[in-house]
Length: 285
Image (tube, rainbow, N blue to C red; front, side):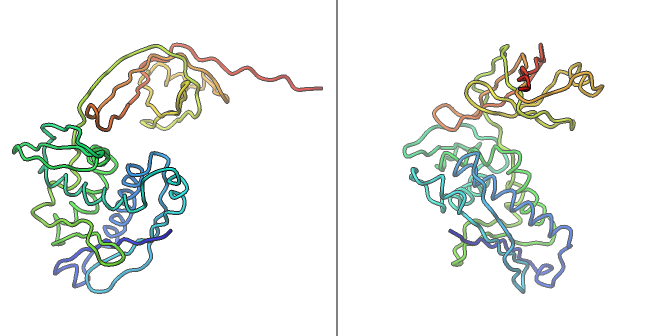
């Protein structure tokens, strides 16, 4: 199944054809990144939504993106979800950012039908789909929205809008609303524990700041390593890795979100206590 969304910029300077080419390219990439986050919030972390540029419209600067839901539909065969869920989340994320007005939620509580109730700093309450919290608290989504919405509105762009193929507007923002779009809302820390456990190393990374991929007895996950002594040994080639190696680590697990709503677990490797190579199978003669 394929559909399309149009990202449109309007304003006197834009209508006159004055938009920096590098800025426009950055906006297109940021919009695709944002839609990707919304797809994962709607359909799960493994969802991959293919986006591609279909056409440019004349007049105001507008880019039409083709969205291919084919890969996602296969994961929805036993679910009540539909591909249009993503449009609800895009719309409600913009609405939630405007509702919060650049401040953290005062209170987030569960509501019926997989909804959440968000109270802002003025005491006003609005209800959204529960998955919306995953977008407005996502650094990736916030950075992308700030790039393709807030930054252009701080310049000569007057309005930014997102519309469906039939012309229905999903979300929009103007100059007055620009400071709020892409605000990174903080998650409430629910629990934070440190424990020692064995993990299977699935994929190391040698670029500073990137996360390593591990697996425990339940799931695979990515986590940064803060043990600088271990990282120095890796940099000096004193530690080598092989498939299915095991690592005994001190790991900090932080749950954040809201009770009864969407909860996220962040993991950090504080110390690598021991590293064991997986046993190698002897070659048959």
